[in-house]
Amino acid sequence: MAFLIDSFLLFIAEKILEQAEKELMNEDEVRQELRELYEQLESGRITEREFEKREEDLVKRLEEIEEYKKDKAA
Image (cartoon, rainbow, N blue to C red; front, top):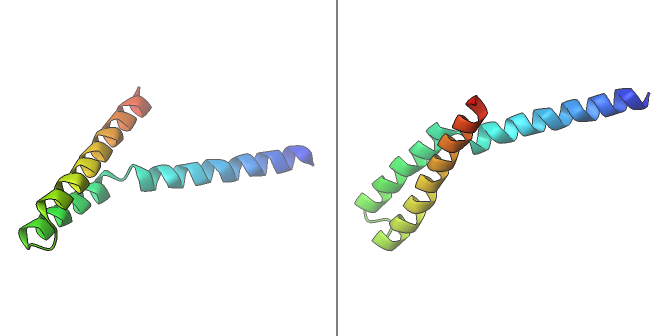
């Protein structure tokens, strides 16, 4: 019985991890956020300073995603 519970908990944990990876490592979503950020800057809805900070965060996230994908492929 304990084995079944352990197996079930492991299965659930793996599914949660898979979903978290999909959400955190979604390159398309980050690129869309970056496009929207450029639009906000061009339309004057955000300042250059706000743009630079958020752009830096998004670019860093893209770099982390690329690194993660390289590590996972190896």
